[in-house]
Image (cartoon, rainbow, N blue to C red):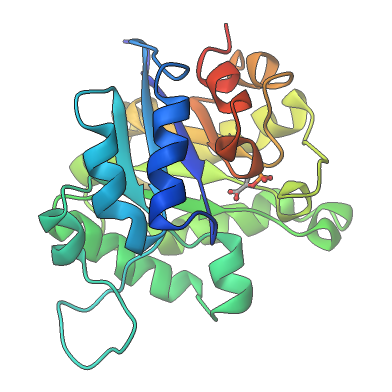
Length: 249
Ligand code: PEP
């Protein structure tokens, strides 16, 4: 069975609650696509007003991060239960910006992934290599390591429902997109890795996105690749161009 595409925006640290509502009002007629899941991952403070603004549309509201503990003395953090109570289904885990600026590691990513599943949330698990790693020819080794640790103790049924976002760090926010062949090569390798950890059925079911300067002009070529099941989109998700990405065909 063909995998359903999933196209998610990552708003990062942009949009006040008021701006979030205005942006959703502007984008909602543009992002209608019955054949794909459309997710807006928004800052935590925007989740509730965004949920309200997206009510009755095909837009799912997601989170950009969560903590791996249930509750307690973790000032500033958001728990999975808070996300679920607010109606969230998807949560980005281990974005490279979280790894770089907030000291997230493959191990904390794994803890968050397990906790997300425990609460019925779907993690969008990010992985990706730096330019140095690509130039040294260790991209696939690096990504396989990230995937193997992220999925430690995750069951096959959980893995089938997960989303992986392959995001080469050198392509994020730089305007430098990986070529569709480069993106496909790594997404295919991720699927092989999932097949090794689990089985063929899990590898076939899991959805793998590409992220890194996706826009309305390059989405069609990227999403046509057999192992690319959609995109994780930063900059362009804040603009009407996101409508073109969602309706890439
Ligand atoms: C991202 O933030 O995950 C991302 C891919 O950003 P951009 O699309 O701006 O490169």
